[in-house]
Length: 241
Length: 228
Image (cartoon, rainbow over all chains, first blue to last red; front, side, top):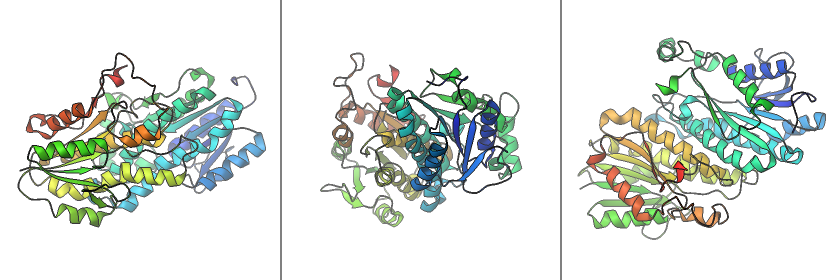
């Protein structure tokens, strides 16, 4: 197992142009990781220092190209953060099948393909950490958003299965459950919706991406060496209410 | 007379449930995907909205209408050797089929108060074993579907819940056949054996008016498997 004092971790963060993905990449860079960030297209939210690569998380060939590039340059992948995700706000009564596919493919299938892409190399090296990003809405629900909530529930269960399957190879897999977070995703929602959600958070504020980045940093560090299959809720206590 | 649509009626649990409900005078409409549907079962593409619409039109409007989903389609292989094709087949039967069924049955489910939507799944997903990652994933997704339907349609009298079946219960033959090495040979001694009748009794209760206060719940019928 590598230790925090060894050579820099080689980390991949998906959804690096999004709020949580960008913050996670920033936190790993600050720790000294070499960070590869994948997203459909680059934006100015991607932290300086991230090695950006175009990535469609729903496409296994896109994953293969990214992992191959990283391994050819550094020989290994130490950490994967599956932060890519999309949300649609449709309730089941009006849900188009195409929309269900779009959400499920990015959130659920993309998470699986990411693990599937990095795990063989991690097995060979006998170490690795994977953090999948779900949501508080993977355990509870709100109005509408049915495809999103299903996909986030699936990520939690998928993480548990992956953790059991990869534990013999000393690969840890955990899942992060963010609550409402000030991010491009929530900024696209109605202001009164956001205000109502935040007002119900016991800690009295919504999350900022840095809250989740700290959790990602922990779960990809040796400080969490005995943590696998865990669901870490970072929501200011909202899920308890 | 109440009517029950059973999606996944080809599996052991689906067949036993169909027989039991029919004996008790319930109008049963057994349905399964065309890829697995056996004799006497409505064979449709379970992701085809028009097929569901046509099916719903055959339900008599004489009482509560229920949907029972038996979701036990199993992927072949583990996390790394399952292919995208396997993913698509498994997800469409375990997740998309139940979504489309629920969507298209929603008018019938909310037409008469007292209707139920039940999603019967393996307990795997709440706990985990190596292997069958897509079955595990479907478990989490189905519980969220149940919660979503429960929260958003309770005001119309609909109740939605998930039932989590012990992996040692042969409710879903595909699970047992596909992964003979997945489960330890014998269940842990503290875990009581769970049979199809045990599951059907709980389903019967959840379909009854007595369960009106239960909504958005995950109800294990696992003999204590998840409690260990």
